[in-house]
Length: 245
Ligand SMILES: Nc1ncnc2c1ncn2[C@@H]1O[C@H](COP(=O)(O)OP(=O)(O)O)[C@@H](O)[C@H]1O
Ligand SMILES: Nc1ccn([C@H]2C[C@H](O)[C@@H](COP(=O)(O)OP(=O)(O)O)O2)c(=O)n1
Ligand SMILES: [Mg+2]
Image 1: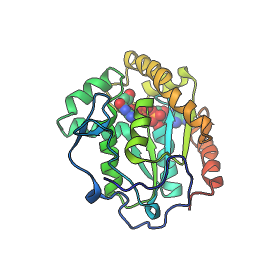
Image 2 (image 1 turned 180 degrees about the vertical axis):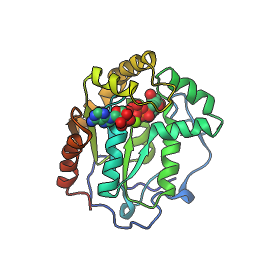
Image 3 (image 1 turned 135 degrees about the vertical axis):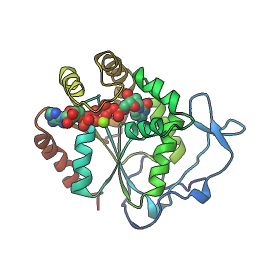
Image 4 (image 1 turned 90 degrees about the horizontal axis):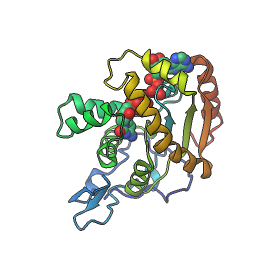
Protein backbone atom coordinates (compact mmCIF):
# COMPACT_ATOMS: atom_id res chain seq x y z
CA UNK A 1 0.00 0.00 0.00
CA UNK A 2 1.02 3.57 -0.53
CA UNK A 3 0.65 5.54 2.69
CA UNK A 4 -2.30 7.92 2.84
CA UNK A 5 -1.13 11.50 2.47
CA UNK A 6 -4.10 13.10 4.11
CA UNK A 7 -7.84 12.78 4.19
CA UNK A 8 -9.76 13.40 1.00
CA UNK A 9 -10.96 16.97 0.81
CA UNK A 10 -8.63 18.58 3.26
CA UNK A 11 -6.25 21.31 2.27
CA UNK A 12 -2.94 21.37 4.00
CA UNK A 13 0.46 23.05 3.84
CA UNK A 14 2.76 21.48 1.38
CA UNK A 15 6.16 20.67 0.15
CA UNK A 16 8.07 19.85 3.23
CA UNK A 17 10.53 17.59 1.51
CA UNK A 18 11.29 18.49 -2.10
CA UNK A 19 14.06 15.92 -2.46
CA UNK A 20 12.14 12.95 -1.18
CA UNK A 21 10.40 10.27 -3.20
CA UNK A 22 6.72 11.04 -2.89
CA UNK A 23 5.16 7.62 -3.28
CA UNK A 24 6.42 4.63 -1.37
CA UNK A 25 6.87 1.75 -3.82
CA UNK A 26 7.80 -0.50 -0.91
CA UNK A 27 4.36 0.03 0.59
CA UNK A 28 2.39 -1.15 -2.43
CA UNK A 29 0.26 -4.13 -1.53
CA UNK A 30 0.31 -7.04 -3.98
CA UNK A 31 -1.39 -8.71 -5.59
CA UNK A 32 -3.92 -6.36 -7.09
CA UNK A 33 -5.72 -6.33 -10.40
CA UNK A 34 -8.09 -4.19 -12.45
CA UNK A 35 -11.76 -4.75 -11.78
CA UNK A 36 -14.43 -4.35 -14.45
CA UNK A 37 -14.41 -0.58 -14.05
CA UNK A 38 -10.68 -0.48 -14.58
CA UNK A 39 -10.25 0.30 -10.89
CA UNK A 40 -7.48 -1.43 -9.05
CA UNK A 41 -8.74 -4.00 -6.61
CA UNK A 42 -7.35 -6.75 -4.47
CA UNK A 43 -7.82 -10.39 -5.43
CA UNK A 44 -11.06 -10.71 -3.52
CA UNK A 45 -12.44 -7.76 -5.49
CA UNK A 46 -12.41 -5.06 -2.83
CA UNK A 47 -11.06 -1.68 -3.95
CA UNK A 48 -7.38 -1.39 -3.13
CA UNK A 49 -5.92 1.71 -1.62
CA UNK A 50 -2.60 1.19 -3.31
CA UNK A 51 -1.15 4.41 -2.28
CA UNK A 52 -0.82 6.92 0.19
CA UNK A 53 1.50 9.80 0.65
CA UNK A 54 2.76 10.43 4.13
CA UNK A 55 1.58 13.73 5.57
CA UNK A 56 5.03 15.32 5.32
CA UNK A 57 5.33 14.32 1.68
CA UNK A 58 1.93 15.47 0.47
CA UNK A 59 2.40 16.97 -2.99
CA UNK A 60 0.46 19.91 -4.34
CA UNK A 61 -1.75 18.62 -7.16
CA UNK A 62 -3.45 20.78 -9.78
CA UNK A 63 -5.73 19.00 -12.23
CA UNK A 64 -5.80 20.86 -15.55
CA UNK A 65 -9.00 20.33 -17.52
CA UNK A 66 -10.70 21.69 -20.61
CA UNK A 67 -11.89 20.43 -23.96
CA UNK A 68 -9.58 19.23 -26.75
CA UNK A 69 -7.55 22.18 -28.03
CA UNK A 70 -8.49 24.50 -25.17
CA UNK A 71 -4.78 25.07 -24.45
CA UNK A 72 -4.10 22.79 -21.48
CA UNK A 73 -0.72 21.55 -22.68
CA UNK A 74 0.42 25.00 -23.83
CA UNK A 75 -0.45 26.64 -20.52
CA UNK A 76 0.96 23.76 -18.44
CA UNK A 77 4.35 24.24 -20.08
CA UNK A 78 4.30 27.89 -19.03
CA UNK A 79 3.11 27.15 -15.48
CA UNK A 80 5.81 24.50 -15.08
CA UNK A 81 8.45 26.99 -16.16
CA UNK A 82 7.20 29.91 -14.08
CA UNK A 83 6.19 28.07 -10.89
CA UNK A 84 8.41 24.97 -10.76
CA UNK A 85 5.71 22.39 -11.34
CA UNK A 86 6.19 19.02 -13.01
CA UNK A 87 3.80 18.71 -15.95
CA UNK A 88 2.25 15.27 -16.39
CA UNK A 89 0.02 14.96 -19.45
CA UNK A 90 -2.22 11.89 -19.31
CA UNK A 91 -2.55 11.95 -23.10
CA UNK A 92 1.24 12.11 -23.58
CA UNK A 93 1.74 9.20 -21.16
CA UNK A 94 -0.84 7.14 -23.04
CA UNK A 95 0.76 7.98 -26.40
CA UNK A 96 4.14 6.95 -25.00
CA UNK A 97 2.62 3.60 -24.04
CA UNK A 98 1.43 3.14 -27.62
CA UNK A 99 4.84 3.88 -29.10
CA UNK A 100 6.65 1.66 -26.61
CA UNK A 101 4.59 -1.35 -27.80
CA UNK A 102 3.44 -2.13 -24.28
CA UNK A 103 0.81 -4.81 -23.64
CA UNK A 104 -1.92 -2.16 -23.49
CA UNK A 105 -0.67 -0.24 -26.54
CA UNK A 106 -3.16 -1.62 -29.06
CA UNK A 107 -6.11 -1.08 -26.73
CA UNK A 108 -4.99 2.50 -25.97
CA UNK A 109 -4.55 3.29 -29.68
CA UNK A 110 -8.01 1.94 -30.52
CA UNK A 111 -9.57 3.90 -27.64
CA UNK A 112 -7.87 7.20 -28.53
CA UNK A 113 -8.69 6.80 -32.22
CA UNK A 114 -12.35 6.45 -31.26
CA UNK A 115 -12.13 9.54 -29.03
CA UNK A 116 -13.04 7.44 -26.00
CA UNK A 117 -11.51 7.23 -22.52
CA UNK A 118 -8.94 4.61 -21.55
CA UNK A 119 -9.84 2.60 -18.41
CA UNK A 120 -8.80 4.42 -15.26
CA UNK A 121 -6.53 1.71 -13.91
CA UNK A 122 -4.25 1.96 -16.94
CA UNK A 123 -3.94 5.75 -16.86
CA UNK A 124 -3.54 5.99 -13.10
CA UNK A 125 -0.75 3.43 -13.18
CA UNK A 126 1.16 5.61 -15.67
CA UNK A 127 0.59 8.78 -13.64
CA UNK A 128 1.66 7.01 -10.46
CA UNK A 129 4.83 5.70 -12.07
CA UNK A 130 5.81 9.25 -13.05
CA UNK A 131 5.00 10.69 -9.64
CA UNK A 132 7.11 8.01 -8.00
CA UNK A 133 10.12 8.67 -10.17
CA UNK A 134 10.11 12.46 -10.12
CA UNK A 135 11.46 14.33 -7.13
CA UNK A 136 9.12 17.27 -7.06
CA UNK A 137 6.19 18.09 -4.84
CA UNK A 138 4.18 20.19 -7.27
CA UNK A 139 2.36 18.40 -10.07
CA UNK A 140 0.14 19.58 -12.89
CA UNK A 141 -1.95 16.64 -14.04
CA UNK A 142 -3.12 17.63 -17.51
CA UNK A 143 -6.14 15.92 -19.10
CA UNK A 144 -7.01 13.87 -16.06
CA UNK A 145 -9.54 13.04 -14.65
CA UNK A 146 -11.49 12.86 -17.88
CA UNK A 147 -14.57 11.19 -16.39
CA UNK A 148 -16.20 10.55 -13.04
CA UNK A 149 -14.81 7.04 -13.29
CA UNK A 150 -11.26 8.51 -13.60
CA UNK A 151 -11.90 10.84 -10.69
CA UNK A 152 -13.40 8.29 -8.33
CA UNK A 153 -10.69 5.74 -9.09
CA UNK A 154 -7.93 8.29 -8.48
CA UNK A 155 -9.41 9.44 -5.18
CA UNK A 156 -10.05 5.87 -4.05
CA UNK A 157 -6.58 4.69 -4.96
CA UNK A 158 -4.61 7.64 -3.63
CA UNK A 159 -6.91 8.79 -0.84
CA UNK A 160 -6.50 12.43 -1.91
CA UNK A 161 -8.18 15.13 -3.94
CA UNK A 162 -6.42 17.78 -6.03
CA UNK A 163 -5.65 21.05 -4.28
CA UNK A 164 -6.98 23.05 -7.21
CA UNK A 165 -8.54 22.43 -10.62
CA UNK A 166 -7.90 24.72 -13.58
CA UNK A 167 -10.63 24.67 -16.20
CA UNK A 168 -9.88 26.23 -19.57
CA UNK A 169 -13.23 27.31 -20.91
CA UNK A 170 -13.18 27.57 -24.70
CA UNK A 171 -15.90 27.72 -27.36
CA UNK A 172 -16.19 24.58 -29.50
CA UNK A 173 -15.47 26.31 -32.81
CA UNK A 174 -12.21 27.70 -31.39
CA UNK A 175 -11.23 24.27 -30.04
CA UNK A 176 -11.87 22.65 -33.44
CA UNK A 177 -9.78 25.32 -35.18
CA UNK A 178 -6.88 24.86 -32.77
CA UNK A 179 -6.89 21.05 -32.91
CA UNK A 180 -6.97 21.03 -36.72
CA UNK A 181 -4.10 23.50 -36.71
CA UNK A 182 -2.02 21.53 -34.21
CA UNK A 183 -0.20 19.38 -36.81
CA UNK A 184 1.49 17.00 -34.40
CA UNK A 185 0.54 13.93 -36.42
CA UNK A 186 -1.92 12.68 -33.79
CA UNK A 187 -4.39 9.98 -34.87
CA UNK A 188 -7.20 11.80 -33.10
CA UNK A 189 -6.65 15.29 -34.56
CA UNK A 190 -9.10 14.88 -37.43
CA UNK A 191 -12.58 16.32 -37.73
CA UNK A 192 -14.43 13.00 -37.17
CA UNK A 193 -12.57 12.16 -33.97
CA UNK A 194 -12.71 15.76 -32.74
CA UNK A 195 -16.52 15.69 -32.95
CA UNK A 196 -16.55 12.52 -30.85
CA UNK A 197 -14.08 14.00 -28.34
CA UNK A 198 -16.21 17.11 -27.92
CA UNK A 199 -19.23 14.92 -27.16
CA UNK A 200 -17.19 12.84 -24.71
CA UNK A 201 -15.92 16.03 -23.07
CA UNK A 202 -19.46 17.36 -22.54
CA UNK A 203 -20.85 14.04 -21.37
CA UNK A 204 -18.03 12.77 -19.17
CA UNK A 205 -15.64 15.60 -18.26
CA UNK A 206 -18.08 18.41 -17.45
CA UNK A 207 -19.52 16.33 -14.57
CA UNK A 208 -16.01 16.18 -13.07
CA UNK A 209 -15.67 19.96 -13.36
CA UNK A 210 -19.13 20.37 -11.80
CA UNK A 211 -18.14 18.09 -8.94
CA UNK A 212 -15.01 20.09 -8.13
CA UNK A 213 -16.90 23.36 -8.58
CA UNK A 214 -19.21 22.22 -5.80
CA UNK A 215 -16.10 21.45 -3.74
CA UNK A 216 -14.86 25.04 -4.31
CA UNK A 217 -11.71 23.95 -6.15
CA UNK A 218 -12.26 25.13 -9.71
CA UNK A 219 -10.58 28.16 -11.27
CA UNK A 220 -12.40 28.76 -14.54
CA UNK A 221 -10.27 30.58 -17.08
CA UNK A 222 -11.52 32.04 -20.32
CA UNK A 223 -9.23 30.33 -22.84
CA UNK A 224 -9.90 32.81 -25.64
CA UNK A 225 -7.08 35.25 -26.33
CA UNK A 226 -3.43 34.94 -27.16
CA UNK A 227 -1.33 32.39 -25.30
CA UNK A 228 0.25 35.19 -23.26
CA UNK A 229 -3.10 36.80 -22.46
CA UNK A 230 -4.45 33.49 -21.17
CA UNK A 231 -1.29 32.92 -19.17
CA UNK A 232 -1.68 36.25 -17.39
CA UNK A 233 -4.99 34.97 -15.99
CA UNK A 234 -3.38 31.66 -15.06
CA UNK A 235 -0.48 33.44 -13.39
CA UNK A 236 -2.89 35.29 -11.11
CA UNK A 237 -4.33 32.00 -9.86
CA UNK A 238 -0.89 30.70 -8.93
CA UNK A 239 0.31 34.04 -7.55
CA UNK A 240 -2.76 34.17 -5.31
CA UNK A 241 -2.58 30.54 -4.25
CA UNK A 242 -1.13 30.76 -0.78
CA UNK A 243 -0.89 26.97 -0.56
CA UNK A 244 1.91 26.90 -3.14
CA UNK A 245 5.27 27.34 -1.52
N1 LIG B 1 -4.47 30.92 -26.65
C1 LIG B 1 -4.25 30.28 -27.80
N2 LIG B 1 -4.56 30.87 -28.96
C2 LIG B 1 -4.35 30.25 -30.13
N3 LIG B 1 -3.81 29.01 -30.27
C3 LIG B 1 -3.50 28.36 -29.12
C4 LIG B 1 -3.69 28.96 -27.85
N4 LIG B 1 -3.28 28.07 -26.90
C5 LIG B 1 -2.85 26.99 -27.56
N5 LIG B 1 -2.97 27.16 -28.90
C6 LIG B 1 -2.63 26.21 -29.95
O1 LIG B 1 -3.77 25.34 -30.07
C7 LIG B 1 -3.35 23.98 -30.22
C8 LIG B 1 -3.89 23.16 -29.06
O2 LIG B 1 -3.25 23.57 -27.86
P1 LIG B 1 -2.89 22.51 -26.73
O3 LIG B 1 -2.13 23.21 -25.69
O4 LIG B 1 -2.26 21.31 -27.36
O5 LIG B 1 -4.37 22.16 -26.20
P2 LIG B 1 -4.92 20.94 -25.36
O6 LIG B 1 -3.75 20.32 -24.62
O7 LIG B 1 -5.94 21.51 -24.45
O8 LIG B 1 -5.52 20.01 -26.38
C9 LIG B 1 -1.83 24.01 -30.30
O9 LIG B 1 -1.44 24.01 -31.65
C10 LIG B 1 -1.45 25.31 -29.62
O10 LIG B 1 -0.25 25.86 -30.11
N1 LIG C 1 -7.42 10.70 -18.63
C1 LIG C 1 -7.30 10.47 -19.94
C2 LIG C 1 -6.62 11.40 -20.79
C3 LIG C 1 -6.56 11.14 -22.14
N2 LIG C 1 -7.13 10.01 -22.64
C4 LIG C 1 -7.13 9.72 -24.08
C5 LIG C 1 -8.46 10.14 -24.68
C6 LIG C 1 -8.13 11.50 -25.22
O1 LIG C 1 -9.02 11.88 -26.25
C7 LIG C 1 -6.71 11.29 -25.71
C8 LIG C 1 -5.88 12.51 -25.90
O2 LIG C 1 -5.79 13.19 -24.66
P1 LIG C 1 -5.02 14.57 -24.56
O3 LIG C 1 -5.17 15.10 -23.17
O4 LIG C 1 -3.63 14.40 -25.06
O5 LIG C 1 -5.86 15.44 -25.58
P2 LIG C 1 -6.00 17.02 -25.67
O6 LIG C 1 -4.74 17.60 -25.15
O7 LIG C 1 -7.19 17.43 -24.86
O8 LIG C 1 -6.21 17.30 -27.13
O9 LIG C 1 -6.12 10.43 -24.74
C9 LIG C 1 -7.78 9.12 -21.81
O10 LIG C 1 -8.31 8.11 -22.28
N3 LIG C 1 -7.85 9.36 -20.47
MG1 LIG D 1 -3.05 18.38 -24.54
